[in-house]
Image (tube, rainbow, N blue to C red; front, side, top):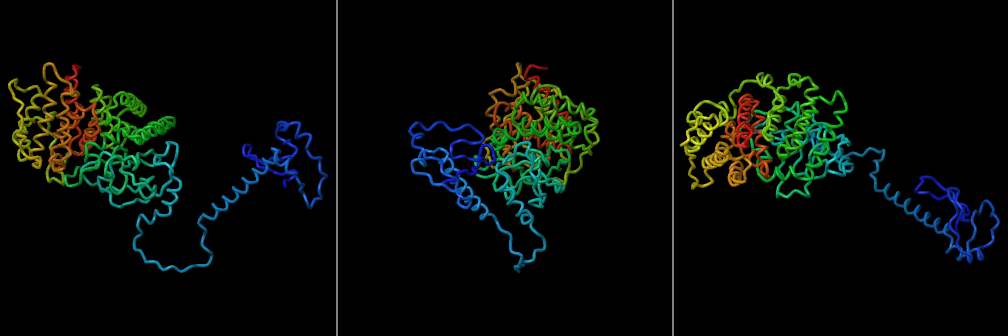
Length: 543
């Protein structure tokens, strides 16, 4: 049986349509003819039934051939199916407790756990967040409670230092966590509230263990983020433990999505006059540029540098950029490193801001001053500078020879002393000798006639040795005490590996020792980088 005139839901138009069993609808023409045979056998119209019985009988032949009847039956079945599914969905939803109060024994808690504060919101986040990385126009509204009240250098920085920072980050909202998103991400990087973030998917992580600890990292490039004091006693930062991790991250699909979202975010901010020249816009941009430096993406770095220069020019120049001295040094460092990779002159000048930074003081973890001297900068003989250090005599001679090359005071008959390498790798002093020799073998080629560029394939073996030596954490205290020598090593390695995957690993070391120069000497670090730039240009025939 079927209705004479029934109401059927039109899924395409979103409203109810009256169906006439004669084959005509108010919204469209009649269906095509069913054929002469049907026309001859169609039953005669049935008189209207009384109001209490609005049905009419349809013979079997008509039921099989009437398209409208078949359509109505299908619609009826769909309605019943959808109704049943809606009831099942409603039944599966959690029901509120009854109005009667139930007594539940609970153990008294002195201080609620941060995880318990996030439990209810975490369920909502898992239901709402379907993708690990949101698009730039999506906004998350997470709880602001931190997952862990303890933040060391391994949990608060993208380009981490060797120290713990006592500064609180309660003002930063965490848009995701392992517990909120239901994902054991191996690494996540946060910039600031309402800014795209980097989160790696666990399904594609190729290494046996994640590199993060209790929570996501916070980018050191943000304006309000202070650069921590170097600490020789703190653990090695996560991105500097293996030479294979950072190159994989820098070329992963998750990073490319993060890069795309950041560019969209910056472009939207540039349309708003107040946001176009803000510290936050500059901070997000230099964070992106730091990763592109790690990828040695020279073409895009030139474009990003042009944009950064225009933003700062609209701000009124370098003196008006910000009131955060550390932030000025971060921007200056990015400018210097872009100049090194592109073999061009720096575009910005923050010398006034560098001068007002505090003078170097005694490092608490060392109990003495950090030494900025290196083959790139410094006038004192290294037999005095490195006296009592872990560097062996051969390594000291090599460092002095490289310093003489930089200043143009070397003798033509000065030999490149190769340290004894028959010792066991378990000896940290042997690791220091190896890395100094490998770096010297690359650096001295820039002074040959004709000079050999840093990116020459002949430096591949030396780069492998530098990678292996930098992964040795037993020398961290030495690198903290002599950041100038470490800066010379990683600058040389980064320039030599510009066409190789290890470039990302060396760049992260450059960021670490470079940003920490805010505490051991930004002026000395600037002069060292500028001297290295001149040597690199000389090796490329650009001097």
